[in-house]
Image (cartoon, rainbow, N blue to C red; front, side, top):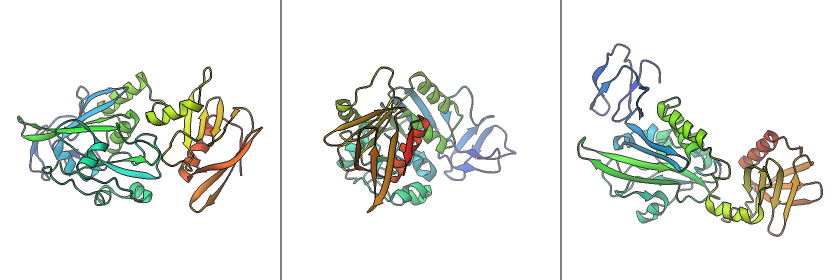
Length: 336
């Protein structure tokens, strides 16, 4: 959005050619409502994001956001959630879930089943590449609630992560201003930062407040895993002194059992577990990896200094994450 454009504080529509406007009340041609135009689009002392989008709190456990329900009518706003797994960050094998707005604060995932919404398996390429309006055309509205509360916000979780307890939401009616207000709690601060970037809010006070919360109590690769996966990993992964967990890559042979088998990378070790055995090697020892695509799956052969195994199945995106992390941590790796 350039300097001659502003956003309506009610519906978030972009109003162009505003260079001659002076601070005061202006009219939005999109929603028909008036709002005050201040001298700055991002007042330094306020916590208000364009479109009536407010940060209630940001802490280690997550972020609570509140906004005018009329924003749900804006396709760009409703499709701004990061298009990757909200828990682990993977961008393949995604299932589409939705944020609905009941009158009591609820976990969005069990609420889906209650109100008859089936999680969608859209093609990953459609999720990545579709403009907001096109993406939303594949997501049905919710039957029952009044408009705009019948317009859900999509979010994504991969097939190996638990979707529960990621987002809680509700709606309440503001009797004073005569409109619905939505409240959303999101557990992953890093994803909320990306959401704000998608909404054009990078550098806003809200963005900086979330960054400050992250700096005070940083999210780690370990805490971003769901508790079920962490519990399973703790059976076979015990951190050494000054060891930092960096990545878990699940073995797709064990569908629905994330944490039982796969690869763990720390700043000190490379560890692989299949159904029977835990293999590990120290950073500094030579690791050899070779892969082959068979029937749409990536088969990975892993060879350490004293062992070799070929029963790891992954996908292209996860393989890229593995390669990046090994380079970042300066493991001695040869690829074939």
